Length: 122
Image 1: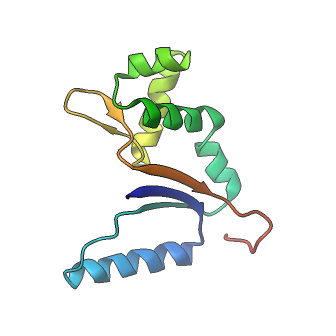
Image 2: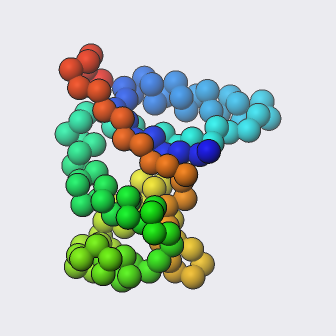
Image 3: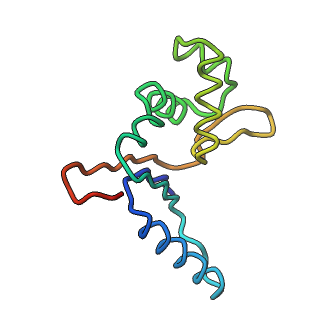
């Protein structure tokens, strides 16, 4: 089951994970199925993953591929705002567009992991 994991992460963790991935691919091993998206602070993460964007991801995952117009209607939101949010989520690799011009979540699940009060990540 492949999942997208959005989390707070240090730059060292990002570099370590990237180096391990490159070494595995160079050694002919398959890449891990999970996708990690790291942010260095909670403010940055929550600025990108607003309540509306999380709801959009949740509804799109639950209802499957559809046009942005259909998704905007389903969410009861303005088309241009949904389009902007889709573009942001596509830039993060969490939404893709099919050949039929429908948007969908390509992951089995999307997890947001935040631990507050721990050591600073930045």
